[in-house]
Amino acid sequence: MTIAPTRPTADRHTRDRPAVGRLVDQFEYGLDAPICLTWELTYACNLACVHCLSSSGRRDPRELSTEECKALIDEFERMQIFYVNIGGGEPTVRPDFWELLDYAVAHHVGVKFSTNGFRITPERAAQLAATDYVDVQISLDGATAEVNDHVRGAGTYDAALRAMANMQAAGMTDFKLSVVCTRHNIGQLDEFKAIADRYGAQLRLTRLRPSGRGADVWDELHPLPEQQRELYDWLVANGDKVLTGDSFFHLSAFGPADGSGALPGLNLCGAGRVVCLVDPIGDVYACPFAIHDQFLAGNVRSVGGFDEVWKHSALFEDLRSPQTGGACRSCSAFDTCRGGCMAAKFFTGLPLDGPDPECVKGNATTAVAGDRKRPDSSQDHSHKGTVRHAPVPLILAPTRLANACDENPLQSARTVG
Amino acid sequence: MSATPVTLDGAWRLSGSVALRPEPFGALAYDFSTRRLSFLKTPALVDVVRRLAGSPSVGDALAGARVAEGERPAYLRALAGLADGGLIEEQTR
Image (cartoon, rainbow over all chains, first blue to last red; front, top):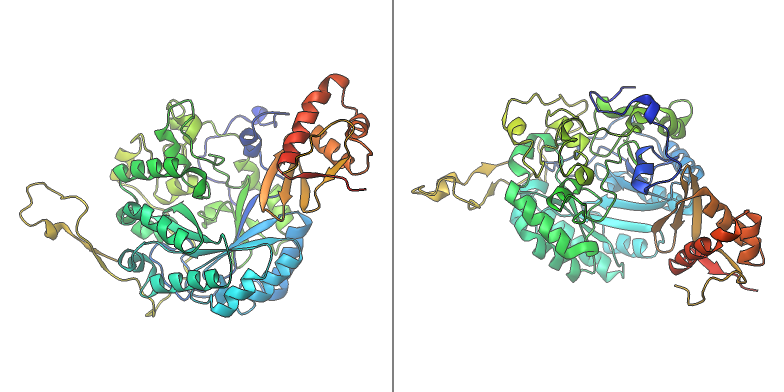
């Protein structure tokens, strides 16, 4: 077990939970069970997305067996964890995926699972439509094949749209179209919304995290400062109609200091407090974006199981102390952004008690541009050989000229990936 | 949604599709049919809600939970909010 490094915390004597107060203050002290538990079922994946949070590809031989998965679901039921977000890897690659799905639902643990859609056949879509408490999230990171396949791989755009068509035809409603926002797709937000509407889906936008393989591409894919503003304005204009998984709270700093411009959601880092991740081998991490030894709280196979890790691990107890804000404390936006995302700071090599690397006030610009020592990854299940659906190199016209006097602006178009 | 106002004389209970999970601040309420998560922000309100089903009236549930006379209007408002959200439903006889 480890303790998160150099995180600013209040003095011990101030750590007693207030009897009443805002929910967000209560959440800082943690809950008896998570609200949002992500469970990566396998590191195996048929794709090799360049920004994979969990560096997935190859199955890990230590992955939980079917019986161990069922025992964990029993524990979720006892703890009244009402639903889990299942991901991977690609969860449907596990031969027992559908069996586990049925088992969870039968034990009052609702499931929302993320998939690339390759295996959502008309038959599976019909099965999903007939199952209560199941929600499906299809990943798509470009509103065009060109933008999407660059990060997710050849043929993945078509597969995602085919899966959505299958679900719509089966009568499945309100499934999610889930988009990771990048430099190349911020300009496509209206198009994403149109695609979601066309299939009767709900659009969900999330933040590109520098976690897993995402650390390798973050510098070239994360939205530019002016695109952050564009995204914020778009989210404000579209309000509750678009889900965000509470992932853009750092953008709330664009609003006035009184918090009136905050985006819907908790606007709080929930790591270890209301959020956690169980990985395929049963390791419990503070959040889905923090698969690293530094944020490892324990393992569900240990004595006391998940319940013990959640309630009493040293790491989670440490995370459940109020933040003091460190270098961000004097910022007018601290109440709305609270220093941003811990994982984003950690994986970009920034101090945890300073601003988020995408701080909209520009307070991290110098640090991001300077020498940063990124942490080594503590696990990597990436494919070693050739992958059938490999990411497609992208050749886009530049969104802006590197130099207004460039004689040949196309020279500044880069091939990445 | 419920059109019936929550009064001291009415008889209510936790909705069949809703589960309560105790938490230090009160409880989480999850509606399995709408997948909506709500929060009961004080342990005292949780106590009242849990007593509803076994009480012939809201007034009895409030008395059982030892809610002072002066606080009853606030509890009725809180229960009305829960009824609006479908978290509690009228008892059927």
